[in-house]
Amino acid sequence: MTTEKKKKNIVVPIILGVLLVIGVIFGIIEWNYYSKHVDTDDAQIDGDISPVVARVGGYVKDINFEENTHVTEGQVLVKLDDNDYKVKLEQAQSGQKGASAGVGVAQSQIIATQANTSTAKANVAAARVKLNLANKDYERYANLVKDGSITQQAFDQAKATKESAQAAYQAAVDQYNAAVKQVGTTQSQLAVSSNVISQRQSDIDFAKLQLSYTDIKAPATGIVSKKNVQKGQLVQAGQSLFSVVNDGSIYVTANFKETQLEKIKEGSKVEIEVDAYPDQKIEGEVYNFSPITGAKGSLLPPDNATGNFVKVVQRVPVKIKIHPSKELLAKLRPGMSVKASVSTK
Image 1 (tube, rainbow, N blue to C red):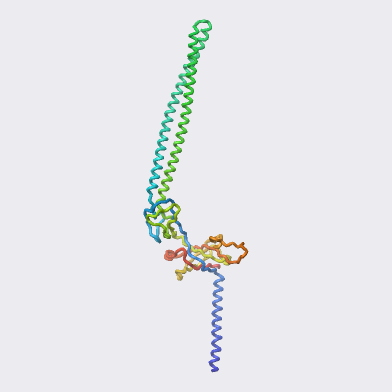
Image 2 (image 1 turned 90 degrees about the vertical axis):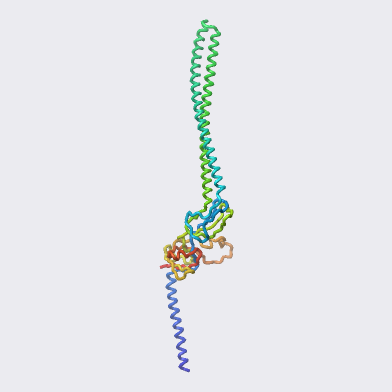
């Protein structure tokens, strides 16, 4: 009995000693690790997600994709009924033809008014010649009537002819001035018609743009998700139809405590462990830091000025670039939970 008690008394200290040694070794390993690393499991896979929104309204005619399938940038995914937009384009084109015809008419009017101006100018010259002749006859008859060489009747006739020539000359000058003004008016009308053509061309361009929006294309190469459209559905401008998760845009957003940020620098190496694939490690590096905390960027940010303030350690989102293998990259999805370990050496 004494020997067994002695053995028991020896075993217990040995076990405690072994446990103590294991604890010390574990503590040293953990201290050594955490002195060189900063960890968080408040992290997830993120990626660039492009929402696709209808830019014009209409009935859905064709859907050329299935949800969760791969599409390429520029691929037509949804086709809207475009009959209304084709009619609007035809109306705009007809309006431009009418404006072009108006320009032709204005140009013809300019040619006609310029011809009238030339005729009026010639009439002015002819009237001036007649007026000069009448003035000379009047002056000659005025001298002759003084010495009685001609009758008073002949002098009165010369005077009447002079006054008639003056009136004719003034009328010709007025007609010429009116013709010149008419040319300016017609040229202004031509400028207005030309502006109308530009406006009608803008209408055509806008109609073509609206027509092109009936082909809803993939904004980027990636996988389609959140499909919210069916064939025959009436969609409105601004309505969200689906989203595209861009290829090659996968990264990690890790929410570190504000007390951990002191040791984290841009470019620091990071080891990523995805919960869905724990056996596959991913290497990455710190890219940048969010300018605000997660709480401050929430829908209802906390207000610490209410008098019942309780200090809570805040978390700051940190963007981490990752370099997974092609096989693993194809499996990663935004929203997956991960664990991030930043090396602070």
